[in-house]
Image (cartoon, rainbow, N blue to C red; front, side, top):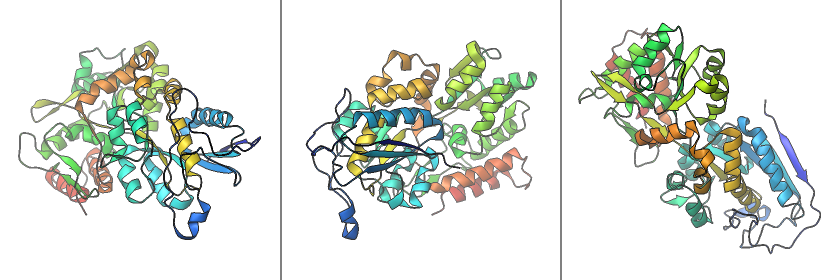
Length: 433
């Protein structure tokens, strides 16, 4: 069931649209641009200009989508936004929890009536732009200057900025309990599995998501990516030639799946296992840093991903790097205020607050360079892993075939098909038009 909270601050008076900036340290001028509406809808939308947002037509109602885990954080951020602009508009902001990874699906169900401002994972950007949900950000140069180049790139299509960078930490790395593992142990996934098995404990890695399964294929010479059409994929994970073949990875996965120290579950299962002590290491992201550190205390450790045994050699695990972005719905009736709110949510100060409350790494250069961020074990591990990561750019047909493949491996291959057949089926699904 969706939870909502409403933030209403009645306007004390309405100002003429003559202000030129957001005001406050660290905030740039509001985003402006031409109205994209046409026909009968054009009369319902504000024409954007270089002036500050005007609300003389009545209340400014905005809906914001964000992760359920961010509710406390967003409540504070949105409340402070209301307070800052008290008197300029009758701002009425509704927050609705919405998964960042499924934001596009929810938005596409009813784009014109979707959220005005929404958080989403960067791999959804191409779809949102192609569907007309996002327009170019008008104050692009100030945002480019304020944010890390990689985060800006993740918010661009054809070098045009379409969203506001929010975090630079949507990747994964290794959490480990120092009571069980030495610095040398965590270099080898196989060594860690043996230690966990001997201790009747588990090492976690989620195989139901291709996002994590990429770790095993990414540094093998087997390829995966998005074709020039921006929709379909290319994939050679079933390659039967080369130094490392697809079947070599599949064999390594089969060994892992059968190891008593291995566990594939979802994120909630990982957190539960960390808390009850059954999981002593796992592959996850910064969103779990606070929970894991609270559970393990002084034994909390974080590092780059280890290597694993494959084709008679040690292969360094790869990873997808990702970024969280804030979008402004092109169909918003109050795009000027929505853009101003998007800037507010992604400002240097609020990215610092996000790190303090949620442990998420900032995309803002100044916020990311702070002593607090730089001293975070989770952020340091993510930066260490970045040498072996790449930006996720894959089409939608990738996910289900990978899940089907890993389900078969985890179940002990009940179909009886050869590993090559299983790989061929997976790749056929991944590259399907």
